[in-house]
Amino acid sequence: MKLSSRSQTPPFHAMDVLAEAQELARAGRDIIHMEVGEPSHPAPRAAQQRLNADMAAGAGLGYTNGLGIPALRSAIADLYRTRYGLDLDPNRVVVTAGSSAGFILSFLTLLEAGDRLGMVEPGYPCYRNISSAFGIEAVPLMATLEDRYQPTPALLDAAGRLDALLVASPSNPTGTIVARDRMQDLVRYCADAGTALISDEIYHGITYGAPAVSALEFTQETVVINSFSKYWSMTGWRIGWMIVPDRFVRVCQNLAQNLFICPCHASQVAALGALSDEGMAEVLPYIEDYAESRQSLMTSLPVMGFEGIAPSDGAFYIYADISGFGRHSADFCREILHEAGVAITPGLDFDPVRGTKTVRLSYAQKPALIREGIERMARLLSP
Image (tube, rainbow, N blue to C red; front, side, top):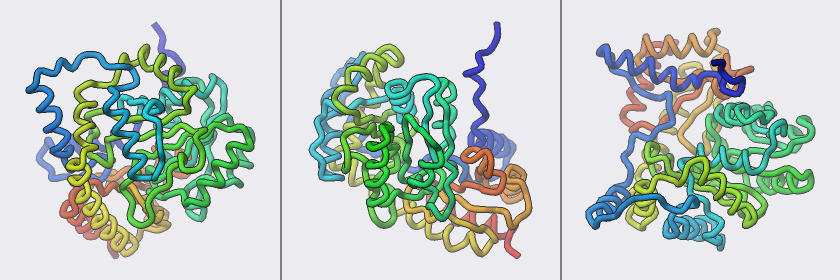
């Protein structure tokens, strides 16, 4: 047997760093984890209690509709009324096995093999790797700090014809947000060019100034992807959703039924608890913790010699230039891990060309751990 060419995706360096950090921890080292975007807070108690109550009542937790249980689809639609003031038809909500399934469904729904999908670099590597596995051409938009690492009409013009554009706001790895007027410009640009728009809004709610803007505030001709993983700290539950135009719902249902059967029933029940008033109230202190950790890093990193730091308007990442240290990012991160006991991620995941000179630091851990990580790095790096 031979391996298919589409299976040959590059490694996810953040996970490689995590594996090495875990190996050191097993050997007795105390490691501060700032390499992966996994909140250290637990899932809301309201989510766990809702699932426990259903289980105690004898819920069968069998197959659900491929689009998700109706109560959850309605609750997600209600979130859009509360958060954005949008009157969203619950029938347009497609519940998915995390945002990853949302990307798979959106790419299959919107793009043919050989089509061109524009995406900013630095950006989340799975965009590039999933599209490559489907034979879709990932077109890098080489954004800069001056662009706030977000797409601009000039970058789109330089890219040539695009069949779809993927926008992430707040972004992984930079944390930057697409401002309201910029989002409106991108929506208009895509409409005029006949380019499908996919909006990754997984970090909405985790912002430190103005709230993030949804593409749905400007157009219904878009696919929006979100998840319970980040805001609600439910990464391992693998539950997310898409908002799609009416005519795409049945198409997504057919694909989802064949690829996944349905999202995990237990996780859908827990998600209902997370969306309750109690669940929403529980996560607010999580955002306060991220804000505290963000401020600590934004203050400390320049003193250590990190440069070109992205604003980190949202999410829980800081993306920084390490050119001044004169080392390849992989070597730099390995030194930080082994000498300081702090795991951070080289920029190679997010920008294969320029990522040799950048790193991403996640502040999804509790503030005390982030402060300890800062102190360890400062002892190693500060002049």
